[in-house]
Length: 469
Image (cartoon, rainbow, N blue to C red; front, side, top):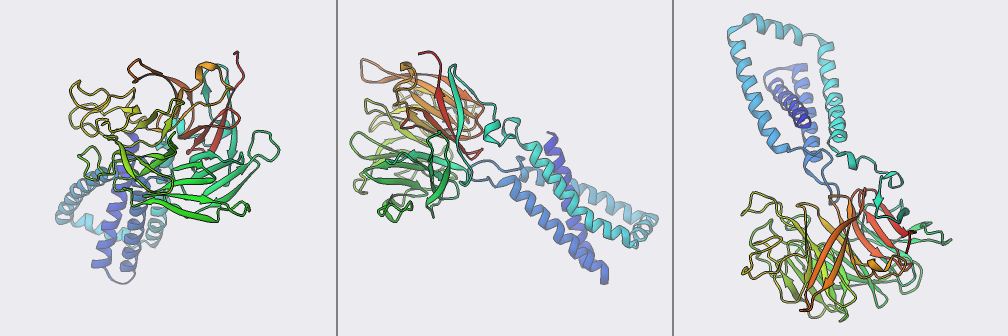
């Protein structure tokens, strides 16, 4: 509330100054016309800065100043119209008031102070708004200082940080090194040269991607999912830089509804690539035959087909040891049929099945013709990366259970998945870790530990177990 009022006051100042500057530029002559032009330009530049900071997300995150800018701007115009009407009335009936305004405008120090004060005041106000609009859990950006809590017996350390931009996806290569995709569209490779479980060097392996959100190794190639396409890359001469690059599939629905696109990759037991594609509308009927679905394609790019439908935005998918496919699903911003926002989900994805979007969310009606979620998360949890634990360093109870990152909650959920006699699945979710900033991907490393990419701190965490067996 306080932040919105402060924004309203600043907008009133800026719009009022712009109006005053325009009046001086049009109605006055000589130096006053110059003053009016400067005031008008200052106000417009600062208004544009406020608009950009309040509406455009950083990467795939949030704006720096989190206020309803357009609604506040509309209120500002109403306030200024009321103030303008009162001032116009006073100027019409009060000669003394007009004389006082004219005398003040003749003071050069006042004019100079006004020209200097406006950008300083506005910039300081925006800086304070930026700081105060950030929730408490987001204010610590140093990954080593985060207050991270894990299930009993588990500990964490920072495995990689620096050089890369905000990470979006990670995968260990056949060489044992960590390959990191970032929001800037680059692929990095991290090397732990002295085997102390901390990356020593991070070097660029490839670049030129747009919204790079999925990476996975398969048969000597790194498959990379970026906006509207999937590519396969290879370092054929072993110099540490990818030198071969081919298109696997392109023309996929992407960023029609931001930031929905084709997402994280998984290799199925049949050797095919599986991945989610987000919807092109926010809860409306889908018209694109490839959107709001799970797709599958051969690694050579042939036989692209829809595997499952009715999925709003599955950011990542993973197979369990039995070869069944699972993944999270992000619901739309609201449910037109309910007063409550729809939940996010964790689903078992079976071939040729429909998962409700945009008709049902969570648990559908019994005769609705769609499958229900295994787990429903609170609305706007934003499930992102998912993996099935395939190591042997954690207690046996964790083996072949799912871990999924919840971006907006800063958590990792542990999901125990069990099969039924009919071949279906049941699941139970508990909080495994909290205190992350924006966790976006989680994988099982070759050492049998989990690795978590945190978009917010630009770091990779290593999760180890030292408790009782």
